[in-house]
Image 1 (cartoon, rainbow, N blue to C red):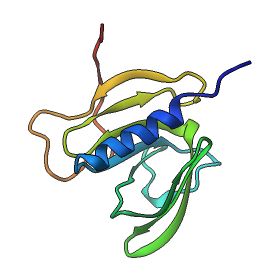
Image 2 (image 1 turned 60 degrees about the vertical axis):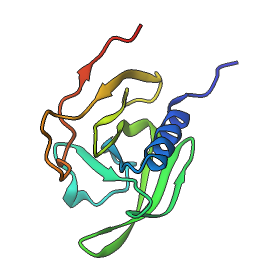
Image 3 (image 1 turned 30 degrees about the horizontal axis):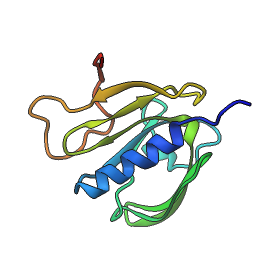
Length: 136
């Protein structure tokens, strides 16, 4: 029997960790035809989405899909992101988070630090290039 992927469980755990600690969870997504996001905000085939409780409505983080409503330029939109397309989840304020393989077949690729030194308060449109860190 093949076990299900750990990815959706890790996404939910890191989302909860961010919220419990007053941080703003963001996800980086590699967009494909199944990803329902505002295409005008997609850059280089990717989009970064704020999943904070004040930025989303009706957030459901399932094992296959992350579904929610969010406002873009004041207009409420319904979004749907396949879990397999999420490449990272991280806290905007300090960059702590985790990166994943796009296909979702393999679980965690590596623990990442997305924070750049002296990072500005506003989040970048895409996360900075991650640094790999070996954990023993």
